[in-house]
Length: 96
Image (cartoon, rainbow, N blue to C red):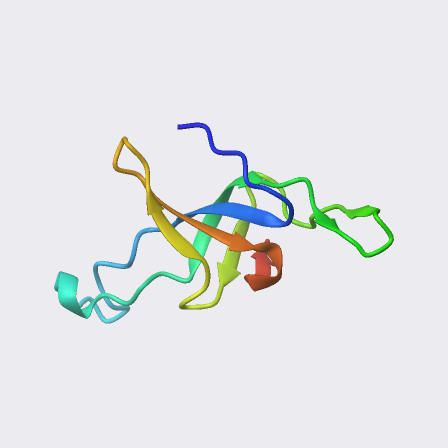
């Protein structure tokens, strides 16, 4: 599915939650934490400022980002892919 977000919104594909702890304990589905890391799939044109100019987004397609635990709106595509749509300001950092 081809999604083009509007204004300063970003589409993110969350990374999979870890199946094991660092100590090697296998986690059941109920105990897995909601991921806070993902890959940018699509980016809008940017935020329109009061003077009418457009502030280009800092993130780009392919960036690995960190975001708040309850940020964005979850959507599911027709293909069953789970994505998040959020404003760029809800992204906390770009992982290098």
